[in-house]
Image (tube, rainbow, N blue to C red):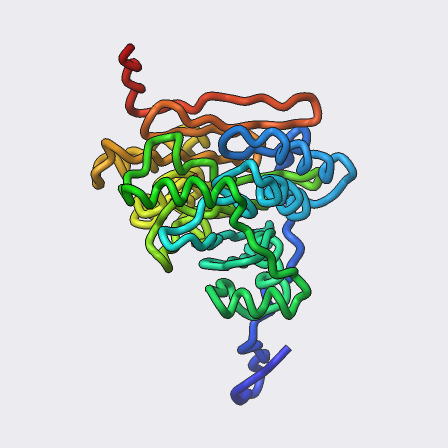
Length: 325
Ligand code: SD4
């Protein structure tokens, strides 16, 4: 414990370097009945991997990392990690973050050539004094930590990009084209909450574009006393409203996870052009209650407990238009 200054008689020395809060073990005030994992989109396999960790008594932090590594390593998932759609120059650039129950956070953005950005983000959190590493610096750090440099552009994603280049029309389509980012929240057997979020971002984005997913408070936020939230969809809208932080703060004020997600979506609806963009939030509170809300019908999320894994449709603000024959 450090001490600076002088003492007058009778004065009790007070440390100028207060104990580092981050190192304190969080005390779960209330516990849900059982561990739970919730994630964006149809990420059942990721949830199952996370549940495996929790069933063995592992931490929520280990669970979310193991969970989101599943789509990161899956070449069939074109919105996350290996196989992710590239930017308009044909480079796959990845954003990811992780946050634990003690309020520690780590993130990487504009990271290339590393299949599991979430694990690099965890190393940023645990082995550096920083929160975010970007681009070349993030890659250098990853290589120093033993991550392998790989080509992440699969032949399929390359072919799609080459087709896209013929028109170079940049128009993200709601729910389909760009959206499969995984945001995952988990509560472990101790009642502690952690989260992770990982993406290749918007397909054919401008070189250097970074979305909401690696930004703590935008794409992901955890407060172990209250709950956690994570976002998917048009990162620019989420960034401008600091969505995940907003959801957690609304829960702090007493809203249910579902209502908090709805209010955060409505904040975007009220203040931003939203006709042709999707944003979806999922949230969980300390009691293990969860909810979701999105702008346009079509967002779904997966909830897993010891007992079952369920794919649920999110509540929405705007109903999907009937497909014309
Ligand atoms: C981004 N929010 O980079 C991410 C994209 C996303 O499902 O969520 N896709 O803006």
